[in-house]
Image 1 (tube, rainbow, N blue to C red):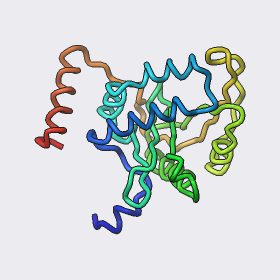
Image 2: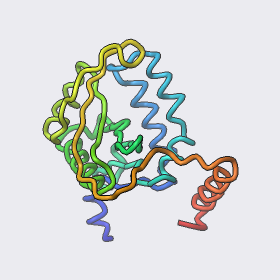
Image 3: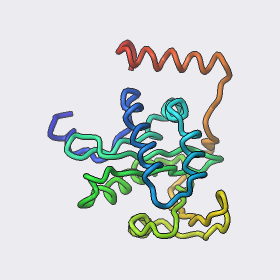
Image 4: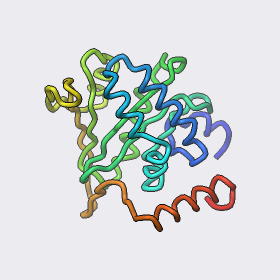
Length: 199
C-alpha cells in the first residue's frame, strides 16, 4: 500500500502495538463523557482492561478498529460478538478530529467491514442528550428499537440496531476463553508479535 493510500484509510483493524494507545484513549473517552454516571464509568474502566481489549483482538483484530485522519490515530471503534449479535461498545473521536465528516465516514466503514455474512445486526446504546450520536445513527440507517428504562445503574438507555446480511450458519457467541493454557498461548503470541517475531 502506498503512503498516499494509507493516509486516506479511515478505519482499519488495530495492531497489537496500537492497543496501549487505544486503551488510553478509551479511558479518556469514558472519563470525559458527560452522558454516563460515575458508577457506570467505574464499571467500564474495570471491565475494559488492556487484557480485555487483547482478548477481543485475538478473537478478531477488527473488534478493535483504529480511526485514522491523515495517517494519524484519530479515534477508535470497539465491538464484540454476543450471542450472534455484533455489539458496538464504544466509538470515540478525539476532539481535534471532530470537525468534518470523519465520524460519519468511520461509521460507514465500520458497517461495510462487518456486513460480511457473520451477523444479523449491529446493536448499540446511546444516552439522552447525545445528539451527535443520534444524528450518526439515523444517517447510518440504525433504528431506534426502544428506550430501556432504569436499565444500567438506574439510568435510561436507547437501544439502536442496524440490520446486516447474515450468510453463515454458525454464530459468533462471544469471547472464547480457553482456560489457563489457552491464555498462556495467547500471551506468548502477543509477546512474540510485540517483539517482531510473528505477525
